[in-house]
Image 1: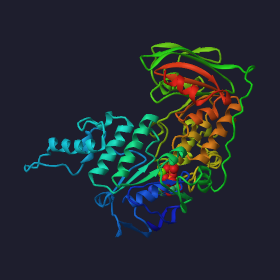
Image 2: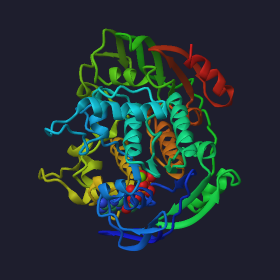
Image 3: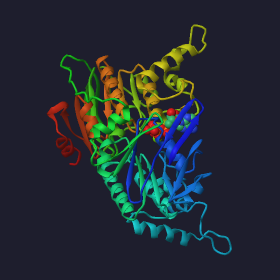
Image 4: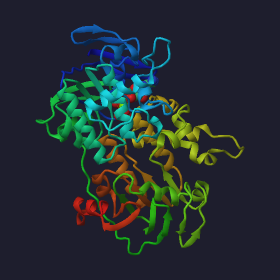
Length: 490
Ligand SMILES: Nc1ncnc2c1ncn2[C@@H]1O[C@H](COP(=O)(O)OP(=O)(O)OP(=O)(O)O)[C@@H](O)[C@H]1O
Ligand SMILES: [Mg+2]
């Protein structure tokens, strides 16, 4: 790809970007949220049309007028947001629009399933072609997407943040698959915000910043710190955790004997004003379930939730918010945003009553000021506060949800995977914000699957395994990753 240009209304998304890929390599594409990574890949895969520049595949100049044309030329993409049809089977998804038919024109399901099985066997995938896709885990759905790409004999496979929602075991499995694809000569373009993955899987790294091409470097020979400073254009300082003395601090939350089927087994803990309590554990350990139960999103079988010394009967999220508990869900796409509305409306949505003036009219000026404040504070990349949220890059959409919850006056804030899909620089900003919130007297629970993140943030670390709280460790240097993992895998 040479000199690729792309403009959207108000956004100069790609400025003369160059990118090349050779067969059998993993080429990481790195950059902050909104740098233009997904846009460049959507151009390569025929989703968007470039304004200028040229694309060659195997030495041939190409212009793809749509995703089908790109697929037929051997360019496959697994989008940041998976795009399978949930009520179709695995094999139906793989061969959608290209189903083998009998001479009477009827879809030959047997042959369809067999063709899918052939690819599963080649790739060593443990998948059943007849399962409904909606029932699969995200990791399995990705395998379906990979199968789909391979069914087109893809020579180029683009993976846009494939590990964002995978657990460690699933990531390891994905890397095995990537190495197998490499060995077959497939060129892979790999986008991720998890810096440690770059060293594990990438051969070369191309960095973009603000829609511009910065450089392409060798992954093994370039220190991560150099890649990060190329991404953000400055050095990102790792600040260390300071654990406040909370011995005098008042207890704001006490959870006693929480139970919900097998998902939550007798979980009890306390939380103080000004405290950040991290929840570590493997995916499926029950951390999100605990958060949802406290927030009234799921019914419980037994247990008590005490807020500020009072027993609360929380039957619904409304009850929870009334009791001063806020929950930023891990599934922000479904529960967090109105994609068709603008940034301003989305930030104000959870606290709309605060924006009415004395005449009962919505004070747009106030909403604008608040939205602009957060755009500034969180570095949300958007042409204006009236941009539709659905048009922002993935990571910038996440920041909008965070802004929305920061605005709410909750004594207790539960953040579930708050930095998923967020770039390194912005992560550091969000950590600072959470610390500031704690200093202002909020009590905070942070659920994170990234151990360095839990360790960076938590004053105490609660570890869960199979629905049980297996231990609470002190935060800071007193606790090692090994100690946490030991409790997480009992
Ligand atoms: N359809 C669109 N209309 C308007 N602006 C868009 C559109 N698609 C992308 N943009 C803008 O183009 C810029 C680049 O976005 P892109 O999605 O490529 O970023 P990214 O590098 O993939 O970021 P992230 O890491 O957050 O996924 C952003 O400013 C984004 O808001
Ligand atoms: Mg993206």
